[in-house]
Amino acid sequence: DQRVYMSLNPLKVYVAPSKVQSGCVLKMANWRLLEQDNLVTQEEMRLCRMSFNTFGYTGDINGKPEVSCIYESQDNKIVDRARDNLQSGGIWGFGSQTGKASM
Image (tube, rainbow, N blue to C red; front, side, top):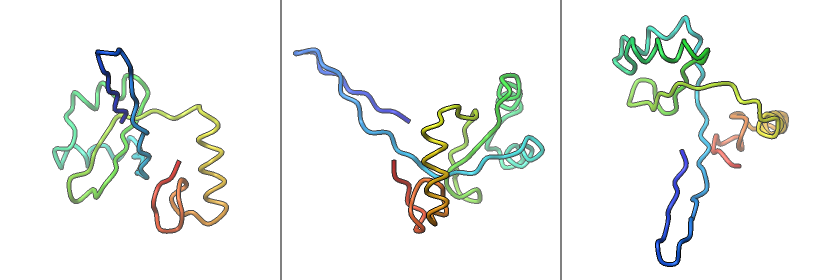
């Protein structure tokens, strides 16, 4: 998620830092679990499948997770940072062993 603010006089644009959260990526075989819990519709599954994407979520799957149709990042800087953090003991790929995300 990205938040953008704009002032009109003078005309300026301000951007809030993006928030990185650890999440879970679902295989297509598990999408029905999301549908059974009314987290996605058949139409959302169809649209996500059409663009060769998959679903991921953040939060507690048994609570109110935030579910999104996601795609694999081709940004090597993100992949390299996640790999470095995992190798140094960060269990989430982006943060410390406490699971807090940092970018």
